[in-house]
Length: 271
Image 1: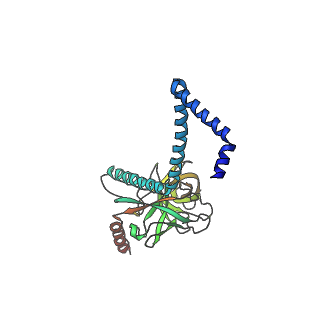
Image 2: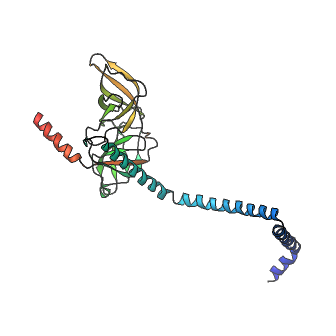
Image 3: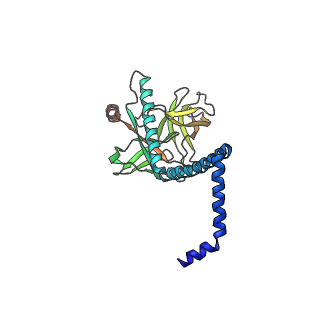
């Protein structure tokens, strides 16, 4: 108590000055409309800054939750897009597709056989041979599944083969990757007489039932014709950036078992 009294006595002139200043400002803002308005604006600015900081901090704390909400919303939009695309044709040639959102938790892009692991598994309805796409284009195909995770073979893998087509004229071929540049793949088996311009869109054909028809794959960069075979190879700049891959959508085709069964019958008849 003695120390407190000594402290107050030592700084009593300072406390008196501060008290008089507060009193003067109070009287000034009370009796002067202009000053009162300025004081209110100042208080509002301070309060707004505090609330903005609180909101920003809350958003940072809840970032994972908000990202998950965005992924769910994107999945709903993708489902709606598939439904609309089915409605444009009389027959459901690509099946009933749904998309399941997931997060890429591990991946590579600089190996000859790259891999991707997502945080969705069998308990989420994921099974092998489901297609996977990102926010800008196709990613790969599910190969192995555990309860809560799934392994994806990306299109930048030496063993990946995806049936793709030229969007402008429907000529199709197989997309392969040679293991060098993770941004570029090759579309093969396009006839030499087909005119291909730089920038032409390459999309999925939808023949296997893994991917629906018309998903973005990339765009043509250049072509190399082979007179001896009659076919040309098309260098394709991939739409997916595998260095920044984060969000994935697993594509579920409800009618794929039916399509697989029919293809098995056809293959057995040919033998």
